[in-house]
Amino acid sequence: MTRRLLAVLLLALAPAVLAAESANAAKPAAGKAGANGKSRCDLIVTAASVVTVDPAFRVVPDGAIAVKAGEIVAVGTRAEVTAKWAAAATIARPGAALMPGLVNTHTHAAMSLLRGVADDRPLMEWLQKSIFPAEAKNVSPKFVTDGTLLAAAEMIRGGTTTFADMYYFESDVASAVEKSGLRAVLGETWLDFPVPAHKDLPESIRVTRAFLEKWKGHPRVTAAVAPHAPYTCSKETLLAAKALADEFGAPLLIHLSETQNEQKTIREKYGTSPAKWLDSIGFLGPNVLAAHGVWLDADDLNLLASRKVTLSHNPESNMKLGSGIAPVVAARKAGIVVGLGTDGVAGSNNDLDMFDAMDFAGKLAKVQALDPTVLPARDLIRMATIDGAKALGLGAKIGSLEVGKRADFVAVDLWTSRSQPWYDVTSALVYSVKASAVSLTVVDGKVLWDGKTVRTLDEAHILKTAAEWRLKIADQLAAMAEPVMAEPAVAK
Ligand SMILES: [Zn+2]
Image (cartoon, rainbow, N blue to C red; front, side):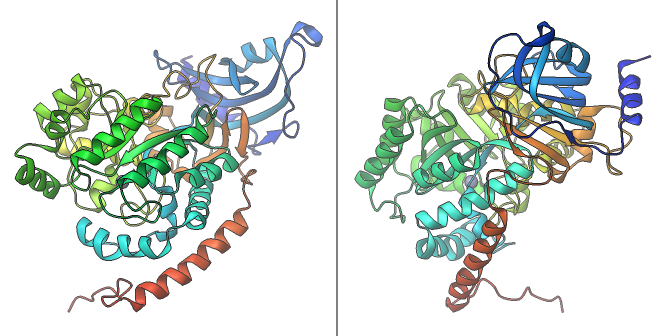
């Protein structure tokens, strides 16, 4: 009997009730060995399949994970793990696959309060006529807190355990992340014009330095510096951001080569491509995570690979904004680590579903190459997990289910009419399911979502608050000279 057939049979034998939990929140296990000579741990989770995303891409049918003090202490078959470990709490997901938590390498979480505020517009018009004015009027510590909590609830329910953010008041974003239980790399965004959090470069440096100092060493929050893009930041701004990031050993997040218009603007201004210009001023290095990279050519890709710059590919944003198709296959071939991202939901995507990101990234690459063999499901899962973790400098800590790594993982329910029967679990995870199939989200060994409740957040309050923001912002936009909430044009 093949292992795959065994897995299918095990699924067929799974009880109708998909979730069974033996105990409430686990207390840290005390003592080394308990009764029966078993080692004690805090939590054991069992499932139909464990997709480890380790270097061998081991998939374990009828598998289990044991967790102690927030760390993975065992991964294997259910029989192997339960023979050796006794847990204070067990969670069974017999119809599900366990996989590493998804890593969203590019978003603007607080912009969830602007979800779909001005769809179907060119990027520059969208930014300049809707987003920047709406942000100027509203972005405050309260706005970013409320928006980030809304995004956090969506991410936790959808199996995202780590995200990279580029926005303002990131210290308040960090407080919201801390409360949610998620893990994040948070980049305070700089522009060459005043933003609500800081008015000029000296203030940007001051605010960001305080943010980096405050969150240094936090177990789940990595503070970062995020100059917005080569077309919105001068050489002076970019180099000041780099100097500050280097001083703190922090990541540098930036948008790069997102649109053809950006290529044109930079070429006219500096006579070269955005990537080459950044390199000419000494900006590029291993701590740089560049989002988009849609218009990178072969020379740019080789340059980024040689500087160990990583990329965040945001297929849905690139499609929705009509930006183009990023050369992801070529980038990976050149040796660049490429993670996946959703981008913000204000108009670039409209949700934070990382299962969609995998699905779209695969299909976009295939249609670009006219070749269905490029970016197979395994590579897409790698991009959404371990490669995203590496892109954020967290590859040694998270991104795969291996002993010694932090316990960030999710259960994805495959016992549903849209995913049964499955013959290859990686195909099911990439091409069949959506974020709504996630029935368990664990970060640092703590259950954030049990399939019924987001345990760390008051979702009812979050939704009510979002609706209040919507009323306020819709009124403001309606009062603007050129309303952005107009009725869609009707074909005549
Ligand atoms: Zn973005």
